[in-house]
Image 1 (tube, rainbow, N blue to C red):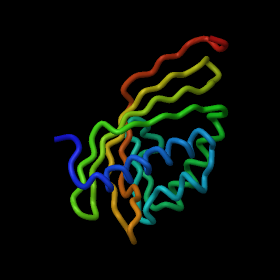
Image 2: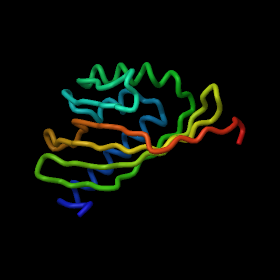
Image 3: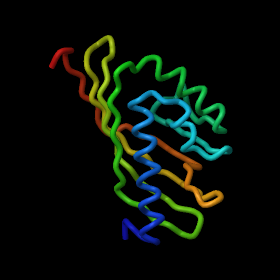
Length: 142
């Protein structure tokens, strides 16, 4: 079953995902960083030059540097599955992002496989693994 566990937890996890997406679009490092557990892990296997980053502080520092290359990004995310088990959850989500790049406008689609943890009543990402699904590049101005 793709959505299991208490409805209030599933709603809180959706809001965690939406907070993450909103912070990306606004390039708000503080809000974005607040979605991660202190000892989190972020893996980007389709980007071997980045690989896996450990710890909130390092994750945020890497993200801040990377976001310098994505001015005007529009980032959306929605869950495909949320399974809550006590203070832990697994979530699969999909992303759509649009941004300008020197070779044109990129429209990317991806998938996150997440592990989340509840700490002091609040949900955080403890592990996120991102994979590309599709990339479309078009001329600017369309």
